Image (cartoon, rainbow, N blue to C red):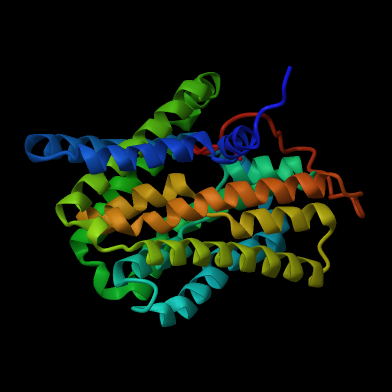
Length: 351
């Protein structure tokens, strides 16, 4: 049998590199560009997207184990460092990128970049990467959980501070955040006692429901963006600049968190957890938040987050595989009372 041509091999490598869920997101953007929701369809899509956002955060609350979250407080230094990477380092890098406006980035793209910088860390992808690299998986679960919880308050507040005029942070805006995000999450926590087992048994179909809900949010956001002519606001040069800037953010976050963890004396397993949890950003949490915070202007704003998410999956998967082949130095402190299983913690694609 003859070997495949170089072009075919390259196509296969690219197909493996692109996460299927991100490919579905890009397909949704294309579909919204060709057939955006208009008229009564737009009203129905808006209503369905609002319900989907509430469902997403309800499921997040119902999946979160309060016992596990409290148990992880013992490693507060690790969580403090990962939180500093997510909510301090990234916003500072975003502010530093302001000098690229308007030469390489438009105001709207820069708004999206700043929003990317205040989104909380991912949960499921960080766990998968940490596990692959033989890091401290229980700590990764807790770090992602704390980031998501803290982000429900920190992300809107940091966005209002950094972005300012692009957000209408009125009493109505705060009520919208509470209605769409906080109340469903709290309801899920209250009902977790009765729903936890059911959600665990049906984690695969519920994970699919999570992803479909996010696709609906993306479709609605870009449908509204088509009315505003978003694709006339971005040139190929600016899109390339945005991609390179997202790559620079990721590289800086990986290097900075790694050096900081090493300088502070963390063991190898904890360093792995800090690097992945401190450099990854949550698509599953960020997209619904953008829809609530920016409303009809969310279309172009979520583009930096989508690009960054694909980059973090590809780059961190390579890094995790490389670290998995390295010898361990000091084993992580075991966490005997914290059960870690193959359950889905957050509705987003694993790396």
